[in-house]
Length: 231
Length: 289
Ligand SMILES: Nc1ncnc2c1ncn2[C@@H]1O[C@H](COP(=O)(O)OP(=O)(O)O)[C@@H](O)[C@H]1O
Ligand SMILES: [Mg+2]
Image (cartoon, rainbow over all chains, first blue to last red; front, side, top):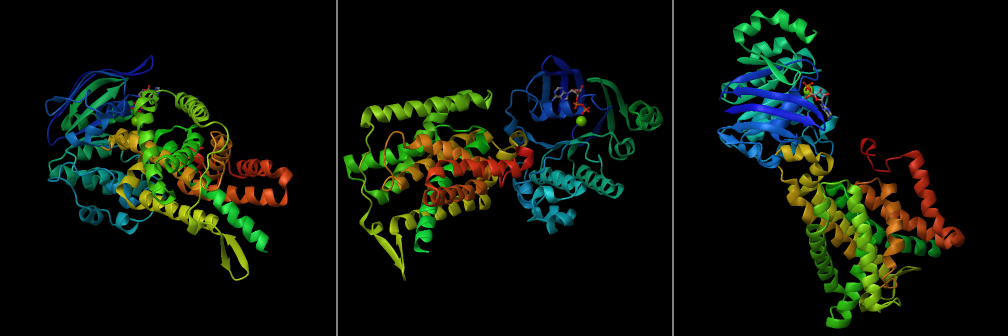
């Protein structure tokens, strides 16, 4: 579904990604782990089209993405949850949900389904987006891309800074999304969380892929990874 | 008492021009990030076009309230397409300088064509004279200007808060990149939004036409006060622009009535006080300041 070849990204003179090769197959949940500054966020921003200075190739379902304008990429199936969650203060909860148009009706969640899965969003539907708690904002950000029916979710550290009970809730949603056949590329520092939801893992270090591990290898080397990530 | 009421109505009428124009300025700033220095010139253009249309085609005040803003909208669209969009990728300062140059150009073109003495404009019969409320007598035209502007501001507010267009404008004002990444073609909204903002300045100009001296320079002092309005209300805040517009109109009118020698200063004293208390303006968000 997603094939990245030789992807380089730059911040002015500084190079953040040094030739990334990575493949995500349809229906897979793949995580990207790596220390702070490894380039995970830059990689996701490059895929969604917010990193202007990139070289190399990003293919989605066989067509080149790098030349497609940012606002047309969701229409090709991408749904992005940014690391800061990207909730609008000037939009209420329901407006935050309905701002992006439904691009893939077959897999799109209706507002009813969203509210059923996240009752707290239903209760606060008229409240300004940023009056929600951190966990609620994260759910809103995830719900927003589910409502569009995106076929490939790009999630940037959805569990970061959240209470265990909320992390559990997000995990349940991810498992449900996976069952539905949606593909997920998940940036995750929480190795436990990553190992329970993902099929495969890429370890990123200094803007390059350091390892490509399947479920078994990832579990076997979990301690080594925890030490490596400094946790 | 009657005198105070009269000053209040005068202030609210003057504030109407500020509120409408500042609303346009705020919407343009929100979506484009451009401070439109030519906004005063567009207000002037609204009044001049109304006067010229009346003179040449006999188009009276009521149809002018619609026709002139539409013309100014088209003017804004052309300016955005021809010039503003070319500088969009650069520092917003470039567009500030562009609109500054544009305002000089417009003022001199109008001066060249129509001279420096005012153009004549007659107000419609029904709006002349006084409105009597018991023992109070209020100028009909000023009351009309205030109520009409209030209606337009309320309409714009509904457009911004209750429609999908308004939602997109708010979203791209707050987080332009994210909004694009969520699939909204933000660029497609830039041109109509610019035109709409200019049209609001033009509408303020038409309303001012029967009431103020219509000269090429009428926008020059207007834009300075408009900047004070925007600073007081909070840059980019829609509600702030309207509230501060009426507030500045009132302060100006009371100043002229009760402290004429200070009337030029009071607005800027108010601005300084607001900045001291709330640097982001009355309705501005601190993080945007
Ligand atoms: N806006 C920026 N300007 C310059 N350098 C940046 C910027 N954002 C990130 N970087 C650099 O790019 C590298 C990758 O950062 P990032 O993608 O945020 O990593 P991660 O998400 O894995 O923590 C880091 O070295 C970081 O310092
Ligand atoms: Mg990151």
